[in-house]
Length: 115
Image (cartoon, rainbow, N blue to C red; front, side, top):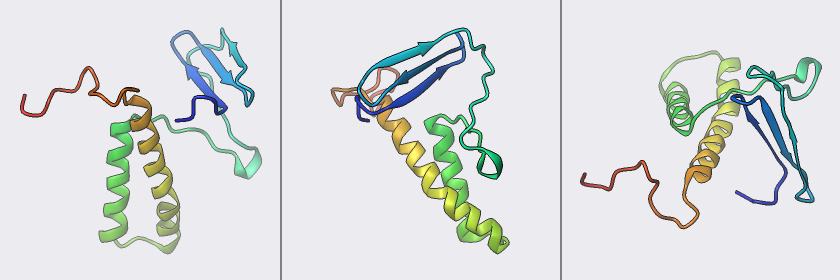
């Protein structure tokens, strides 16, 4: 993940939103509460985020793949799942990358193979 790219991070525990702007400047807003709704777009294009862990994104991606390969669904539903599949895959990959240690070593809570 690019350490200089703009990003927004919401931490529900303190109710804070941290923004990193294109130039690297960071802004933190506190006191937003634990249930801040975050919207993208407006009107019919409005969307809310679905918060997933890497494991949840992995399972969801596999479920979508299974449905597309084996379950008879309407063309409209197929189109939605075909559009969603790469987004879930990208989310999973980005979460995995964000969780990986910078030195390429093992994560602290992952057992070594054979344990």
